[in-house]
Image (cartoon, rainbow, N blue to C red; front, side, top):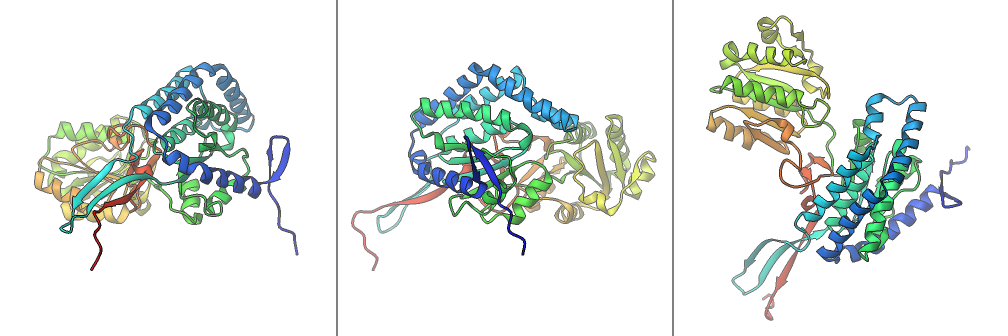
Length: 434
């Protein structure tokens, strides 16, 4: 029988099994979670602002570390798009520092009273926000996620374990050193924000198994293959979305110029984000007046259109859509377009082919809009607005770790409030239950 392979990580000068390293990281995180949960707002904000100052002060070190990462990516034949995601420059470092300061300026969610009421027997009951505990964040490529995820979890009173992509491990380590400096300056335990010290994929497996019960939630941030693996293998709750198959449904009566602006923006502003529209649905009742102008506006903006027979009849330049196109998350300048016979058909299409991420209706029919908003089961539903607004910053929630499409309490943008749970505080005056 073949012996099971052991994975090792280099920690300091020692070579230790990855499982041992990850178990120790989990134990450290659990040990400091209570201290973080009870840390005051002033201490957490101090850690964030001091970390931002360290990022600016140590810019040369960050750029040097990033140069090594970028050189290694080029040598490995990494795509230009991936290299761009992993590249730091002074402007991007400033943006990371400013993001930490923005997180510090947010209201502290911990201890906030969500609801309160009195019972006839005199009991006073409050539902209050509490930290989740220990959060694991697994991400790829973008080193700024090190600061964003670390800062958000810290603000919400959670300990966090960060496992970044191997391509930008040096950059993430340099950013993490600034977070550690901020924690130290604020008198908070440095183990509150830990960066996995190995790029071995076995570390991801250990996190998915929950680190011996020391991990409470996992948040994946990356491509579809990473998120799919996390959702399939994780033994702890996951805050994530697998795909962003977002729809825009245009229904009459509606101003054509407004509809064109929204549709083109929803698809073309940034085609590679999860809130980009992937399917356009046009109501049959207005197809004669709106279908051709909407499709031509998309084509003029540089978008490839794949349509049903109605679309191709109206605009011969459109390609024929296959069944797979209605499920597709293109993340590119491509959109599927279909004519639907009324509101029920539009809602049914979204239910069948959508991913519960973000869907929009564009119409002046207030009653139809309300039905769409109420009946479409997506994390975000919109009326007369571009799906590209599916973003925590645009919602006024500040930075976010990502967008979740599950049914747990964290649905839609996952910001500081979504990184908390709650408990009930009950105050009595001697009541006993008969």
